[in-house]
Amino acid sequence: MKSLIGWARMVFGGMGPTGQHQATRLGPYHSKRFNQIASKDGLHYAYVPVSGKQVVHDAKAGKEYDSILEDTIVFSPDGRRLAYGAHAGGRCFMVLDGQVDSAYDAVLTGTIVFSPDGKRLAYVARSGEKYLMALSGQDVSAYDGVIKGSPVFSPDSAHIAYAVQIGDKVTVIVDGQLGPTWDGVGFGPVFSPDSNRVAYAAFVGEKQVVVVDGQASPTYDGIGQGEPKFSPDSKRLAYTVAKGNTQFVMVDGQAGPTFDGAAGDLVFSPDSKRVAYSARKGRAWTVIVDGRAEPSYEGIGESSVKFSPDGKRLAYFAGMSKQRVVAVVDGQAGPSYDGIGQGDPVFSQDGKHFAYTAGKGNIWFVIVDGKGSRRYDTIGAGPVLFNADGSRVAYSAHVGETWFVVVNGHAGASYDGIATRSVRFSPDGAHITYGALRGRQRLVVVNDHAGPAFDGIIENGPNFRPDGKLEYLAVREDALYRVTVSLVSA
Image 1 (tube, rainbow, N blue to C red):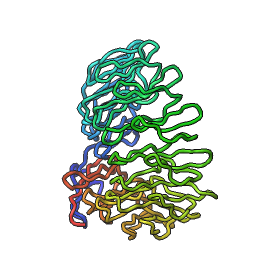
Image 2: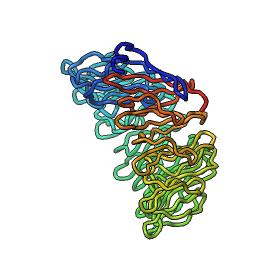
Image 3: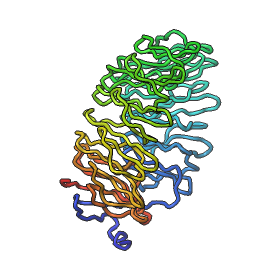
């Protein structure tokens, strides 16, 4: 096979039970790599080779510099554009699509961000003792500092906001317009989903306020971490506040019931009509739904409060006595278990079905609509997965020495491992794919049929393309390949 690949150089493939597998050689793949990163869809890949002087993007080596700045490689959301920081001649600069931007004394890691549409790039740079917000190759202005979490683009990519320090004060700038000055910014800025509103938490001395569209709330002793939060329709706003020894949640300017412990899982329903969060009073925890408290428990599972996609149902995990855990759905507690799996609970997209993983002793189950599966030694990391219409449910599991993927209760072929969070349905729900391990070989499995063997599969893949084909990047014998699968009926 090695001589065949070397001779063909560009393409090899074959017809499998699920369709044509075609692998195109993109170029060499370095055995030693640094700062490697894959695009969100897993279809593009970049890294710094051992020389440390260039970035290799989809197996094509870029221009050499004195060095590549660590942790600066960033893909646009669609994976089509690449930016990274480089150093040459004592100066630092960003390289966007192979073109060098303005030079500075430093480019700050953690500040480099593309707009959601991928058309604009923003980052923070330092020149002397001043910090500059660079936007699409232009210096916006110089400041005494830029606050962590900046810059932020609006979901429609039309607006940008960032918090900066001017003297001993802090202000939030939206599209170049300075807002009021504060003693600090606690969280934000954050745009509403429709991109028309901006909110953040700010300090007034040791007190805090929430600022929405430039208007400040009354002062409080504290604002909840990661808040304020907009509803999906952008019309509602919620945040947790502390006042003395009590806390409460403000929703649309109205205070909810008081409690002792910090609220968690502050969430709106997808239709924006409902809001829920967990809270503690004394030693008891409860979930507050639309201002009303559900039954109390010894604890509420972190990040477990979830609405169904239609907003009509609510689920969460709760702690009982003797370290037992239950799933609570529509206010009703199910059977108790020793543990609950990560990433749960999960609703189907139509809200009619509900699933989670649970354990008793060393045995694990998958619970779908209240019914338990067969016993497994382990359930794979990641949530149980429903297809688009809710007719199929899938997850990876482990028994003895083998791993497999289960679809509607039926176990597929056995492998030595299943790639973490790789199980996914096609948009129409007709096909299922995942990454698998057999010995030292990595495979992509489609509809329970294994594709060609590789030395490695690039993370975040495989993925279904809009044209219905499956695509992923793979490594074989120090070469990077792009693999496409033309699917036939499952």
